[in-house]
Amino acid sequence: METRALGERTAALETNEKNIFHQIDEIKREVHQLSHLTVLCEGISQKLSSFEEKLSDTERRLSCVERAPGEDLRYYKRSALSYLLTAVLAAIAGAVTLVIGRL
Image 1 (cartoon, rainbow, N blue to C red):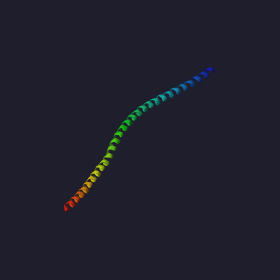
Image 2: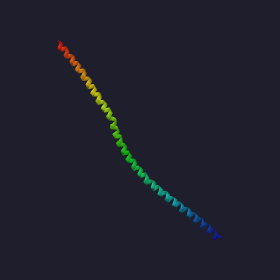
Image 3: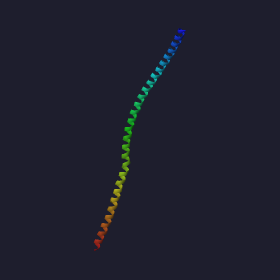
Image 4: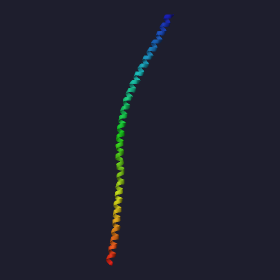
């Protein structure tokens, strides 16, 4: 009877051993997959950093492009105002010259 109990216990231990080794193999596969994912995440992180730099450069250039029409508009407003003011002053000077000429 002891031999039978020892045989059953040995069989149970062997089954447990196989189960444990199977679990260890699964854990090894998962660790390998995690290391692979870590490498992929590092690559993604580097690409995101590169994209962030490119986006920052693009934002700076876009800011310059957006400011340019406003600066041009201010230039044309100043020019138009200068021309108008010159015309008014010329008309006044002409009128004053005409009045002085009649005297």
